[in-house]
Length: 298
Image 1: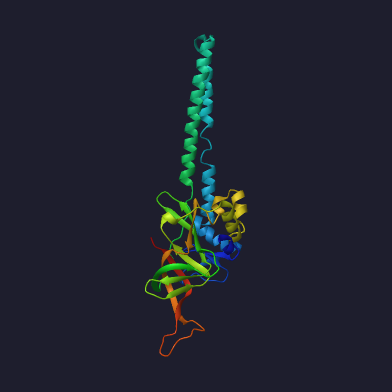
Image 2: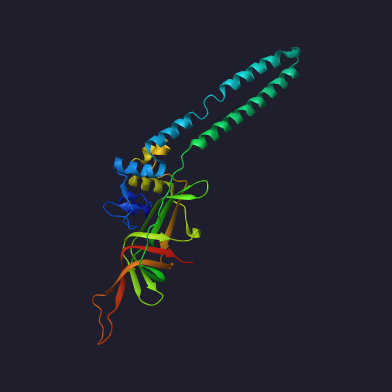
């Protein structure tokens, strides 16, 4: 189902990082800014939110490149001079003495290189930028309903999905992108009656135990559609120019039979063509308007 939505997503909310179709505002609130990744200006706006201004990113690159320069040169010369002195001292002529010297020299060199690489790694990590995830959560208001999901007649049992890209930081995971959509489904409500959620964008939440991995090829196609420069930035290994960095990608599935809680705006509509008797209430259906939040219940 990810492939079904890929071609329609061109924009990302800078605040809550929701993937959005063209010309559709973010439902998170009026202060949620949206940028198109299909244009240089919009893409740079998201890169700034994730990595910082161009001057900050340039400085980080310069410091990373200069991190290990000059660490090894002087020490290596000193070590070589020490080997020369050792090989000529006391006239070591025996083969056993030569072997011992070579083994000790190799161990010293390995230890020295390990220390140098550790210093270089620590310097690079010290100057490395950390990507910033979503600052705000989408604002959700409206009526609360509970019930069991039912697929539409002739439809597949998977009626909706959610996708999240997360980046592991030192203390927590940052949310870099969220996506969700439904094929359309109905919910048999616990208090009686039914609710209908049309096909379209959806916000889906659930327990960690329901999260699944995502096929890498399918994910790459999705990201390439959302961000046309994704493959070029990845191949050039320009991490600080990637607006969608992540260390983990997960998905949730919404399936027929799931117990859920719905939150959103619903309108009661009379079912057309219903035959009702005198003084009988016409059968009706609650129909969602706008984006609905669906929470998977245990």
